[in-house]
Image (cartoon, rainbow, N blue to C red; front, side):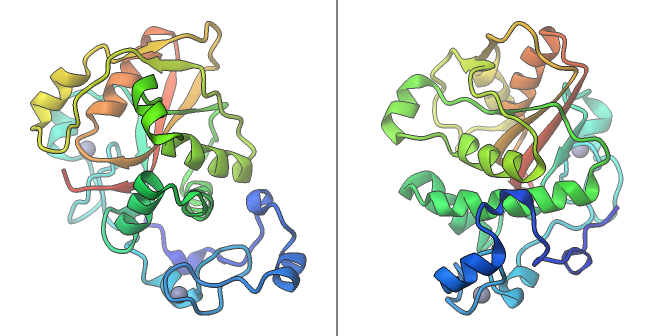
Length: 246
Ligand SMILES: [Zn+2]
Ligand SMILES: [Zn+2]
């Protein structure tokens, strides 16, 4: 099913908005994060910027890789993934890439709030059954100390609040401090991430969604999904804000 941003009323309320729309407008005239114009209630974006976001179109129904038409991509045909489906509202393009970099590298936590709300709207629109639990991709403790926060947790907090799904930030841990992966090939990423995660929680529910900011080759979420499968999780979805075409 293709998501059409105009099919969802961006001013509709979600429980995660936190502040009632009327009150919020009265107290703070909300400005669009992108153009500083007047924002839609509770969205931090104006209607024109909302419409022009790089919404994902036709894609692989398993891994959300952009495709000419909806279907299953070549890689998902050849290789079984440990997860069932990826849900991503956006392609990793302007201005979403800039908002995510602002979150990750400059600590712009407000970006996580607005992007998490958009993820919730998109997932609420395309999803059938919501998961029982959100598991944000953990950072290695060294990286967490460096950065001071985990962007996946910030996104999961916002999306979970909006959809009323709880998150568990201690369910899994990253046990290998992996190298920065941006210059690696897909095979190198897979090797780099093998056995990178350990599940600590002993009683996980049957349906879990892993939350992360961006999915590139999927090596990270594949590795974490394998760990969750070994721990007995039956259905695993991947919720990310943006998908790159590898
Ligand atoms: Zn705007
Ligand atoms: Zn695929």
